[in-house]
Every structure is written in structure tokens, then in C-alpha cells.
Image (tube, rainbow, N blue to C red):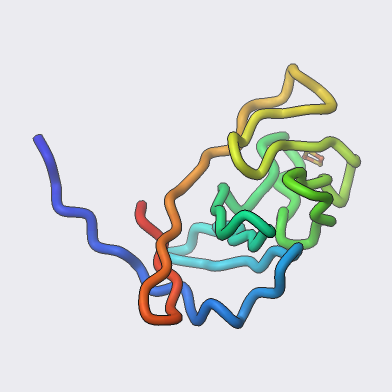
Length: 106
Ligand code: FES
């Protein structure tokens, strides 16, 4: 069954600098919105380990995000863990741009 997906307005494209990440909270759930050279990406907002660290406090290195608590790295594009393959993959969400606005498609 296909349900119609309603895009959620995140904000304006210019709200996020290239090479950075911002947290976006929607219905009490955090999402990390990344702006890379190659475009916008979204992952779950908290790291997948028990610490639940906010990834928006992390450093962005190219297409990788480095957990600010432990230093583990993940691919922002695929969500795959890079430094510790035992960690769970980050959930990935679709971000679209329209008329200067950014939308999260859950
Ligand atoms: S503290 Fe959770 S991955 Fe680093």
C-alpha cells in the first residue's frame, strides 16, 4: 500500500553552510541535516550507540561525520559505519530542495 508522503519543511537552503550539519527536530525525533559539496543529506539525529550523542555536534569531514563523543565515523551518504563496523548503520532520509527551501521526506 502506498501512502502519500508529505514533505516536511526544514528551512531555507541558506540556513546550512556547506560542510556543516544542523539538527532538525520533528515530532520529538532528531534528524541531522548535512550540507556537503554534493548536496543535502539527512540521517538520524543521534548516534546509534547507547550514548545517543547528537550528530549535529559532530565534525563533518568530506562525506564522513565523526561522532563528537567517541570519534567513530560514519558515511553521511550511505549511513554505513566506517571506523567500527560493529556499529549500526545510520538511518538515511531523503532531502529535497524546492524554491530555496529544504524538505525532509520521511
Ligand atoms: S558515542 Fe555513539 S557512536 Fe560515538
